[in-house]
Each structure stands twice: as C-alpha cells, then as structure tokens.
Length: 98
Image (cartoon, rainbow, N blue to C red; front, top):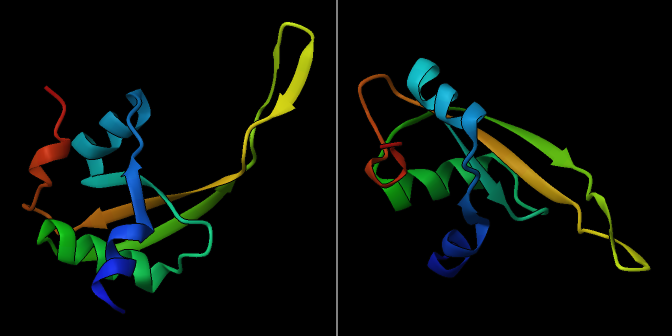
C-alpha cells in the first residue's frame, strides 16, 4: 500500500458521546473511512499514522439520512465507520476527550 493511499483511507475521527465512552472503557476509536477500504488497509493506516498497535478492526456500513431543506428533499451519502481497538496502555493523543 502506497503512502498516498494511507492518507486517503481514514477521513476523520467520529466524535460522539458513545465514542468517548468506548475510548475510556475499551480503548476503541471510531473513524469514518473510505467505502472501499478493507479491514487490513484500515489496520495498516491507523498503525502508520498514529504509531500504535491495532488489535482488531470492525466495520459498519452506514446509510445516509433523508433530509429536507425548505421544500426540497434530499439524501446524504452512505459512509463506512470503522471501530479500531488498540493495544492496552496505548493511546491516540490527538483524539483524547478533555
């Protein structure tokens, strides 16, 4: 996997109350990733970008929501979410809740 692909796989971290609880309890982080990314690619990307050891990766395909604005109804894009569990004792410093 080339270096450009590593930066394209992980789009951004998914931040919510649930993900903050996962970080604290089970050392799991949640990212929005490319829809065509595989578990192995996600694992390699997280390990190279954040210098941590990944234990497991679980992925979930999320359906886009139907939204309306004024009288127009549209639909958001579908996206893929990755739950990444890292080794105990390691943290991703940039994603720690304050």
